[in-house]
Amino acid sequence: MTANMALNLIHRASLALLAAVLMATGAASAADSDARALHVLNRLAYGPRPGDVERVAGMGVQRWIDQQLHPETISLPSDLNARLAALDTVNRSAGESLAEFLELRRDVRMDDEGAKQRRREAEMRASRQAAEARLLRAVESPRQLEEVMVDFWYNHFNVFAGKGIARALVTSYERDAIRPHALGSFRALLGATAKHPAMLFYLDNVVSSAPRPDAKGKARGLNENYARELMELHTLGADGGYTQRDVTELARMLTGWTFDQKRLARTGETFRFDAGRHDAGTKTWLGREIAPAGQQEGEYALDVLAMHPATARHVSRELAQYFVSDEPPQALVDRMAATWLASQGDIRAVLATLFASREFLAPAAAGTKFKTPYQYVVSAVRASGVPVANVGPLVNTMSQLGMPLYGCQTPDGYKNTQDAWLNPDALTRRIAFAAALAAPLDPAQLQATLAGSISPRTLGIVQRNPDNLRAAMLLGSPDFMQR
Image (cartoon, rainbow, N blue to C red):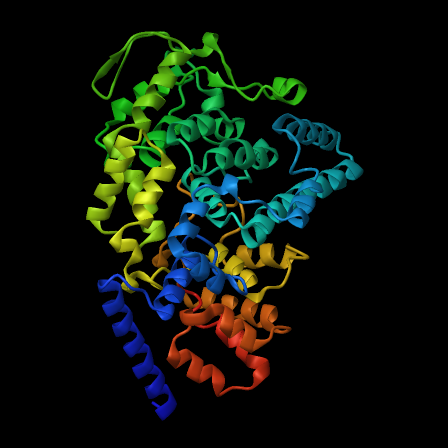
């Protein structure tokens, strides 16, 4: 270790000790304020942009958190609004998107090469614009927590864009079912996802109906896919205390929850209850006898699931895992679950409990979460301060890193833990991306933006290399891959 590195380590340790003493007496040093600002920017946001650490520290971390919890109070930049408004496929209704998809599919069935080309171009255009809207918001929106929660909930209620007509519906799904409720009522979010045609199609509830015997006497019609994932992934959790019979009975309660492709494309009707497909018999679910009540059986099930103690624990743990650590403290999960039940599933209230916790604010928690490919790419672009002119390279990089946008095939969505993403090949690809992005950057400005997230040891190594390598080394460092 060089003398300078040793001095840096001693200085950093001294600052940490001083900060701890000052915090204990109720006073906060400038170094501590910057460290806390950087921590919340790495967790509630996709990392700092140039000047963000100073801005957040200056306004106060708690005030910034409160502001992020109420994104409607934060104005979006006019240039961002203008770019989003120009994305015509993103701003279409679900019906309009599906109508184009179905028309192009009919043309392709005529075995017309021109039609096939038009379909490929239309799908690529829609996919590109969906990615552009998501990434523009993630990089440039000041409503950072809202963007983080949109990504969190999309993974929680995942729909794979590559399954049939889902590719025409995922943009509406994110915009109309996920985004409006990202910081609101969990029951409203659960209902919006349950009734959206993207979810109904992806998990096959669109074709589920009361069991009827076929020619061989076997029962056909009931599909349990959505009912199973609704309890296992979306609400109670795999250890939520339900049985296979509960899955079957919930699937029966949800028969008739469907949509009609042609009606959606023609009239925009995204959900309808088809009484003719509904199982009108009495059900026994989670120990309750459910009398026949048509659509209200499913609504009742969502009411129960949204406020079930197992749901409060399961989703609170997922939130704590995302924001605190891969193995979150049980005491924190318990406090969040208590807030969940007391607030009737108010997501904002649960997050406020999390962000005010000693576990979240502990200095030891900073820099301990490994970034997913999405988080890494977005945080690198934000740190660079370079405006997003072309999302193509960003989309390609995420695909190469194994995390294509809207591309998780399984209902459980993408993981946010280190063991899911840390491997030699992925690190090599991240470093290649860092080198390409960093080419035009000023390393001194980048280092100032990243502030205390880069360790003295890494800084020492970076400083011993030529200027044209330093920015790439900062973005490709192990330190920057943590949040």
